[in-house]
Length: 191
Image (cartoon, rainbow, N blue to C red; front, top):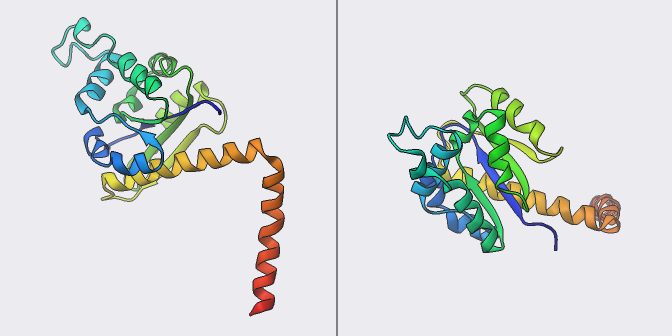
C-alpha cells in the first residue's frame, strides 16, 4: 500500500469548525479530520508565531501542530487538515508546517471564492515546497457552505486516489482509454 494522503486545506474564509461538522462526509470518502477546532486554532497560532497577539506564551502553544500530525499518523488513514490561516504563512513557516507531515503524501488545496482576490500569494509560497501535481486550487461560489467545502475536499482525495491507481496499473489506464470510445460507438449504433 502507498503512503497515506494528507490533504492540507489552506484558504480564505473557511473556518475549521463548520468543516468538522461534516466529518461524516469526509469519513465516507475514507478520510479523518480533526473535530477539535480549538486544537487546530492553537496549531495555527503556534506555526504562524502569533502567540503574543493571542495573549499566550510560547509554551502554551508549543507542540500543537506536531500533536495534530502525530494523531494523524497514528490513525493510519488518509487525513484532511484544514487551517485557512495557513494561507498567511511565510515560506519558512510553510516548510515547517509541511515538515511535520513527513511520511504522508501531502496535497495542498487552496480555496478561493468568486469575489475574492486570487490565491497568487499563497500559491507562490506553497507550490515550490511540494512536488508537481500536489497543489490543487478549488473555486467556491459565493455563499458556498461548509458542506460544499467538504465535498470539494472529498473530491480531491478521490481524484488523487484514482490517479495513484492509474499510475500503478498502466494497462488498466490504456484499456480504459480504449474501451470508452468503443462504448460510445456502440451507443451510437444502437440508437
